[in-house]
Image (cartoon, rainbow, N blue to C red; front, side, top):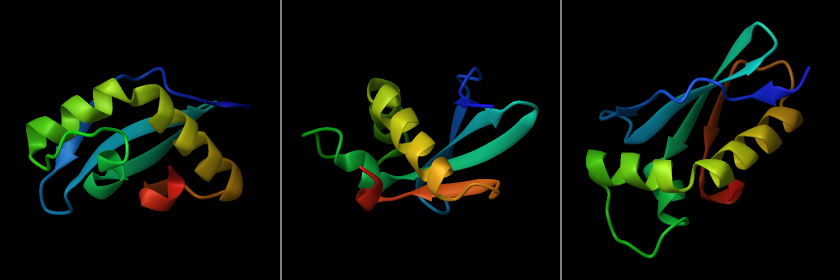
Length: 88
C-alpha cells in the first residue's frame, strides 16, 4: 500500500516544540513529528510559537507530506518518524 494522509488533524507538542500528524499505510497508523526548526525552512517568516508552527504547517502541508513519504520509504517498518531540517 501507499502512504496517505486522509486525517487532516495535527497538534502542537509544546514540550518537544514540534507539530504532530499522522499518515496511514492501509490500516496502519504512522506518527510523524515536524520539528519547529524544520518548519522554518518552509517560510521566510520568523516564528516558533504554537500558532506560528501550526500556520506554517498548514501552509506547507504538501511539502511536509512529501518529506514524510520519503522518510517512510527509507524507514519502512517503523511507526514513528521525526522530520528535521535535513528532511526538507
